[in-house]
Length: 315
Figure 1 (cartoon, rainbow, N blue to C red):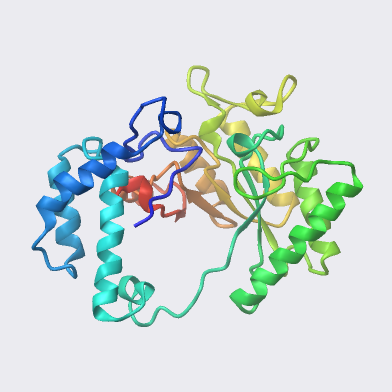
Figure 2 (figure 1 turned 120 degrees about the vertical axis):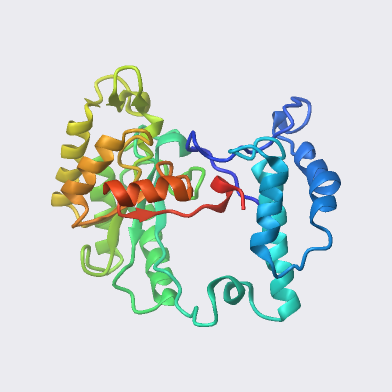
């Protein structure tokens, strides 16, 4: 199975095993992980029933024996875990989504399209990593996809008209030199309208703040100067929450991912108390797809949604 890899990652994620040999792929080769699959994992799981996903995953976790899958590598374990699921679906002659989600899995989620890249995903001077459009008013996935494509091209036209760059960042969104976050949001709203849709009715806006990327642990502040340069804001947790609330009150924002630092539990609880009834507050780096962190979040009222990325947990 193919294993994804992220540019901005949570510090509690499972360990991705890389070779560290600078002469191959700049040290990012995965021959050690592949060797672990072929020589260690294969030996341990041959003979299992391919339909017993849990038993196979547990056997690999036990074989690794570390809390973060650092011995065999989460990329080695997950690759096998995905391959097992695919093999079982093929054996049963059913689609993979039915095998994993059940036979009543017939609804596609609303796509969230990342059309402006900032933070660690581009060289644009914007701290937030992703500005997304969410066509929540579309009747079908097919229509939502079309709306997104039309807005993307309308945005390109607007950027060109302003003399801004239309090169794209790591995730395919534009990475222009905006005059800050609000300029980015207002330009997206203009693109939604130019494409013939109504912001806040047909199409909404979402952020991935990736706040851990600009949180200063020593000073306990959200330091926007890291990406936005001299003169940018430096905010306390309380000020960060006020800032996000101000954006939510001003614009049709429906979802905010990683609005607070991954270790700022008090900040997350305060943010959820303030905005949890209005918007989706998503834990990505915060939960790192880990059921222990998720359980704590539910118990303490921190965040109200989770982003599931299997590479963060390793099976």
